[in-house]
Figure 1 (spheres, rainbow, N blue to C red):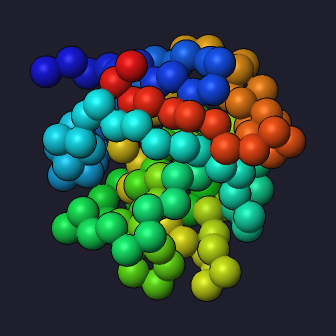
Figure 2: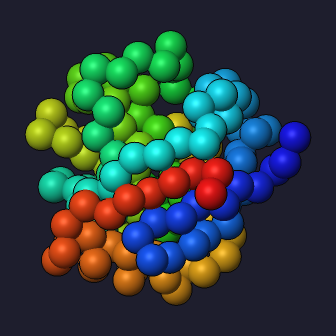
Length: 137
């Protein structure tokens, strides 16, 4: 299997590597969903980040390789619990949170190229609204 994946978000394209060694269950579950098409919106509580809200979706996952402070490009999957299930895509300073308080999500993908475009995507999403995102583009 490929260790990398293409992500097309708005007008931008990124390559990300799967964090298979540290989050094998999350990576395996996400791979089973590919290609994954959604829309990304700007976060409300977490700082400089975008997210894909997934409501009550249950991926059957627990915590692995989880963090509350992802670096730009460290993509998280929050498996649900005290807040709704979601995918977090940080582009700057971020403390992962919801209206329920601080959260931790599974770091399962890391963007490895075009990092300079992440803040552009974040600001575009903030000021222009939801952007189409495709994992496995």
